[in-house]
Image (tube, rainbow, N blue to C red; front, side, top):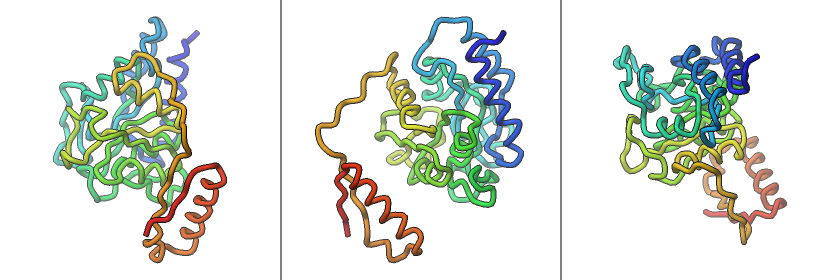
Length: 257
């Protein structure tokens, strides 16, 4: 009889086997290593906030013993010697690193081979294409991404998942290929906000999740409307409906021009 961690890993690997030929979310999958780690966790006491959670890692972030190709043929055969700091934190919290997810070349503008699981004829967005697609397809519940401008929030929106870009400097970036020292941030993709929260706490080195603080006032949302003239009618209607829904839910929505 297999344990809970191994059962969950087998489910993830099964989803990868079934879907990734079409989706193309993965640059490298370490099935044997993931299974071994799962078995070890099943035999141990709970290690942390991410105990047994399968995670994909964007292929500009180092994972020891796995290739870091940065989405480019010029890095073919490049094996990382050490874990990036964020990967170290994830492992310490009990995470299972499944493998490396596809990045656009050098995390810039050249589209990757990855397709959007919601519609294979559509782009998943970039540059964290594989991470967003892997979570969207149910291959893993969490995946690391990085963002310089919109490389977490854009593919998350395209693929219909949660994209969380933390405050700059919260997650250490050693072992991550940088584009901009003043902008680059390590983030995460998840299926729900509740799934992202333990990752966030683990990245701070916390051993247990604190309760989310109570809000003493309504959340405020700024709606930039001076660019809507460039949107097609479907997008304009979608934005207006989203603003109405947020207002109805008690958020304070204001227009900015």
